[in-house]
Image (cartoon, rainbow, N blue to C red; front, side, top):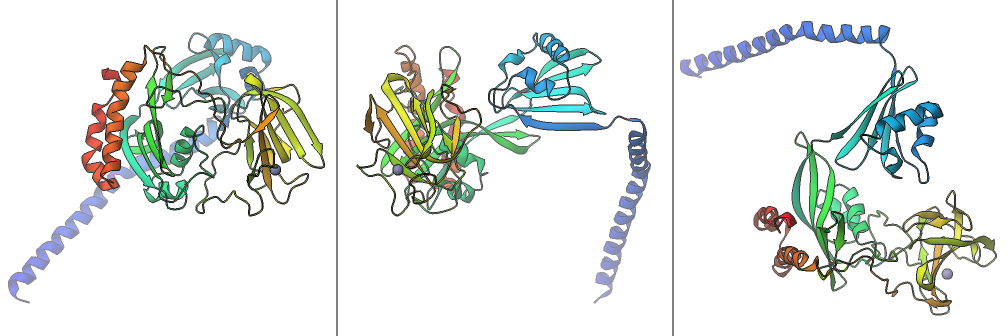
Length: 431
Ligand SMILES: [Zn+2]
């Protein structure tokens, strides 16, 4: 080591030492603040009320009065609150499944938060018996991105492979609830492309927003879906020809399940569709949710040695659906009750003449059993003739992007490079 190097080391060492000292000095300067925080904490413990926060979802069939009274308000207080909040938001409109929070101070109801949708929430503050309320927009930044997944063994796995969150698998599968049964119909090599919204708060990913459009190549056929705002302001999903994605029947009574591998895992070796059988057998674990595939009325709920626990629903246009071998019914499921499409009516079981946990699902039209797998389900509310030209102008731009990706078999990196920058030029609001 020569003299120059030694000096250099000493100088660097000194700078380093000075830096550390300075950092500590800065920390030292901050320490009174730290102390203050501790003081505040102690004070809080001593004088401030004990805050508790409870987070829940609105249950099906539950109204706002029921929610408020079981959370500490009297009926009269609940009534006052509903009336006073009315100028901001009509609480009669709360929807099953939406989240709400109740904040109490020393067990006294002081704040109510209701998440209206993914972008805004209602906040109600209580002071004695006055309720003030406002609607708060969550300041997300929304970014559009385009993803392509190739199915190797399951949708869930394909989504995770692209470093997306598992809930994206649920969102995408539910988009195809009317056209594809993601538990059964998936094939190796299927490709799903989607333009999705991602919501960020302070630069951090929080959740997925809407699916703008999607293209699914399944077993050789392609299903394109496009989100579009109708003339009446409502958003809906449509196929490129203007047919609504929403149909009278869901493709399957069993919801999409996030399994990590295997195709056709539902096809039990000895079960499956057969002509003797008045329906299709869907193998699934005991306790799997069973959904009403269409809105209708419960006309039978019972038990016998063959069908086990069963439910029969009546739907418009002479349709009936049958659900057998159930382990139990969902609460409130009784003869004469109305159910809506997608509502959980029961749980998969192994009751009656059954060789393993499965759901027998049958569809009748005017008394005749038809194959649920090939059922041509009528579309609901298609776009009107007036709406179609603008919709087609918009959807063609999206389809062109999808075609580009498919024809050139682009991978995610190529998509990011060549397609992503085009996304902002295809807003339907320009039309
Ligand atoms: Zn069966």
